[in-house]
Image (cartoon, rainbow, N blue to C red; front, side, top):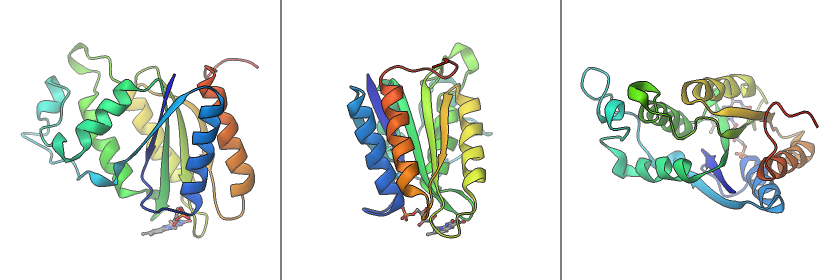
Length: 188
Ligand SMILES: Cc1cc2nc3c(=O)[nH]c(=O)nc-3n(C[C@H](O)[C@H](O)[C@H](O)COP(=O)(O)O)c2cc1C
């Protein structure tokens, strides 16, 4: 099982890094091969043509060589995914916004396309490291992305300065369960 972590974290340490490491550790414990990618390298959607570009029919971004193609391929190759964002301005971070905007266009369900995330388990993590506010909005934005792409939300985690010890443990255990093949909807 290939477990992909898509991160919007620009930092080398801190809350996001800690919970990302916990997820990585848990997924490995569950037997997964773990791969981490960062969405901060890509630009905003260029909004080609009248609103759709090559994303509509070719399921490929015309500007994908900025790093987006590699992100799309990584998701295509993954069996399960975790998406992690620091909370900025009460929302997902800019890199995650850009990724979600572009990915859902390319992996749309139109023209008979199945979508690279369709049916795959995803763990959503938001880290409001300041006031602690905005985690719900960020999770809600990511949940809408899952509705558009057919991803199946395995769990939602908010980690902040005063809960990251036990939320880290939750994230580790969630990733381990996903790596072992547990599905949303199963009764344990
Ligand atoms: C531009 C900006 C906006 C931020 N907005 C919020 C916010 O709305 N709520 C919050 O709790 N923290 C906010 N923060 C703090 C970040 O959430 C925090 O740095 C990050 O989520 C996670 O912590 P880490 O940097 O230790 O990984 C903001 C930080 C930046 C740089």
